[in-house]
Picture 1 (cartoon, one colour):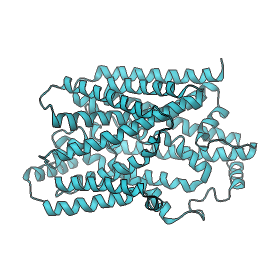
Picture 2 (cartoon, rainbow, N blue to C red; picture 1 turned 90 degrees about the vertical axis):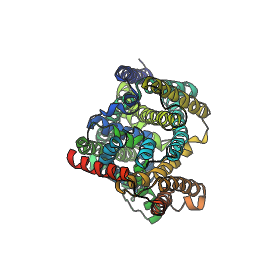
Picture 3 (cartoon, one colour; picture 1 turned 45 degrees about the vertical axis):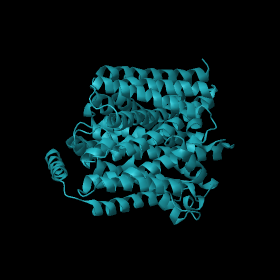
Picture 4 (cartoon, rainbow, N blue to C red; picture 1 turned 120 degrees about the vertical axis):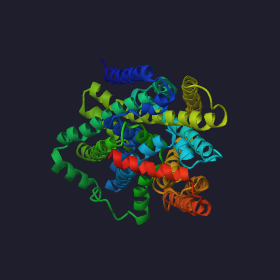
Length: 494
């Protein structure tokens, strides 16, 4: 059997398992809360790893190792910022959001939570945030499909469009039928695959490069500053911009929705430990993969054609083709887990925050689950059309989407959980001005080159939301009672 066939066999087995999980989840899904939020029944391990897998995408296995391979540990500042941001997200947002979303009319999406929490009779928050999620995640899903098409093209020589249809078909199938449970369970498996691959490659690679001492010497021979977090070329603004990626966590709908689905507040602490442990070890594995790659090519001559393929190349050098296929499955897992998470959140936004708010308020859950599945299909078709051109510029929107979501939703989520005087007008104007600031800043080269747009966007949103809320605040006994009940439940469940 040829190397390609072994690798393809591993990919096929992986995809069959994902479809099997989708079918299992389909059988367990009976109502809208099941479909959109898994019935709030996730355990800490599934919650933690599904949040991590949904978050990291192909960046963890390709983008970060490629950046460190090319530029050194100065690229770790993004990883440091993300780790700190993820930890603070688990610590400050997860427990309160889990309780508050249930207390506030059992909200199952971020927009519906904000609507219920702020008693927004205008429905503008729900509709505006639903539209923001719908637009940006459609492009986000499309970028993942592009990555899937290119993955099959570069790994197996398949036609780009064939690869795109294979990846899209499998992801859409298990998301469409299994909903949130399928996405979470598959993300858990995908998170394990990613973790094992990232830990295994650098450990085995060290034996090939002569151990730690020889590996370090070889890297220093290539670039003496490769191990420096602050090389001479680094600037304060660049480091701040990298660390600021961590701010984005507070406003990422596909990540914080996991906090709403965990079975109890008590389990958020265990989930935090599992999630941050997974994240740190995976990031260290990505760093180790890049460093071993530098040492290997220094010792053996030659040069890698594309730095972002260092993980793939090392996997094929170090392991039997079938094991290398599992390594390829890890990259596919990273791509697919993110697409699936974004699809289910986009479906939720369409059904819960736009369709129900504008058109139909009295139908039964079966109707809404059907509409949710049709929403997944619709968004997938639009995203597929956008992704059909492999040279599409959609991928350039991914960085903006992270900044846009972080700037639009991050401050509002934090204020809604910790400040009872936040008003619907403050939240709406803060959300809109934060997203607009991030967009404009990111599109002006002189500004974008100076500072990552999430920093000004986040600050503008925070300031506007506080100022407008102070100007429009009127005491509401229902909001006060709900806020206090949330705090009391948090104390009780700790």
